Length: 244
Image (cartoon, rainbow, N blue to C red; front, side):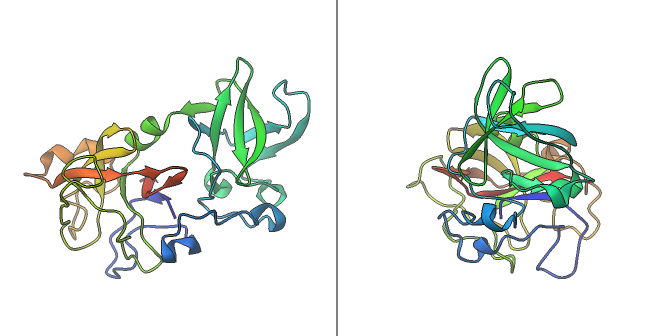
């Protein structure tokens, strides 16, 4: 499980403060490909493993077209996410069409098309028009509502992902406060993100709930600040909050 839609509303149940889409692979925090069979049964998860994280992501519009070739002469389909979800027979990296979310990993782009991954490693193409938005991973993460370390279905944080003083694996570690966590991404350097702990996230009456973390993170007094590794090869190590 990597990306979430909402910082949500506070819940007394520690299992979930946010509206999440579960990915069973998180139970063991596996970094092995977990969805190779997706294109056999069309059972897309919200976050689907891919063979490469590419150069960024393509944010498809709610009505979009997808092709087999870079010249856009061999159309696979024209889909409306809100009406054609049951007809979609491929998985984007982040897949939740009933929320208007189909975000494809982009591995190359030309004057006319974006070369994208579906179903782990299959190559397809999206038209390069103003309706299809390209974002680098830096932009995608930095413009989010916040991030956290990978968690499993019980809300347990992966022991393999540690907050560190410096963006290197052998740097000293930092302990996070107890409770549910949200970090605000401040700077991205290669595979690492400098983050600040959201001191308001566990408040019963959080006046900033639903706002992007950059709107208020400076109001935290002496916030815990450190570095998280956000990817390892072709695997994301963080959950990203996309919507309020």
